[in-house]
Image (cartoon, rainbow, N blue to C red; front, side, top):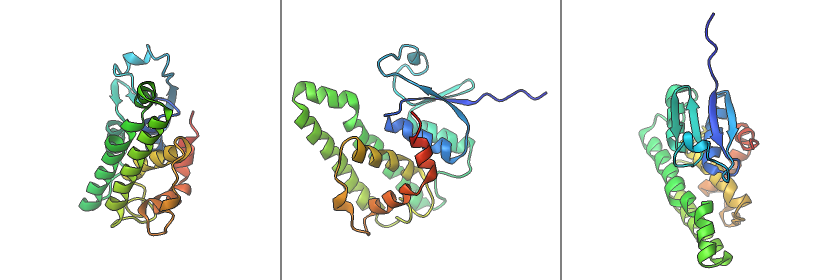
Length: 211
């Protein structure tokens, strides 16, 4: 009798946009997995999985992968259908750039520990201004980057890596940080195309419903 294959385990936190990216990738690829919620205030056991203490972390048998980008690329190589990167070399590079803008140019500046530190050192108004500036600056850069290749989604008519990073960031900007996206309402704006496309993206809604 064939040995039953163990499900992947995803250590996640519902509020984490980094975890959200990975949940979208898993859902998009139709991969069954066990969702393991991590309490950020009680994570002693989780430190055995990821000594940095940050979610997400993926356990695949004896393999442990942390960091959302590393996990997503691991999944894309192990489960290549549907692919998360386009064949076109230019669009592939754009996907990497868009992901980088989100994970290094926006997300770290809105992280809870950073925001809490700013409040402690200054006040809530300064924290709000700091977060708004980081998100707006990043979104402006993304608009310029994506303008030449936006389709139904960020870099064409298929969901790729850029969308996995954009969807949670846009969701957080609107719902957590009350960023006004109205100034992006012109139909030619790349993020507008992305928002409209992602609103009809079933896998996004399924991934978002995890808690």
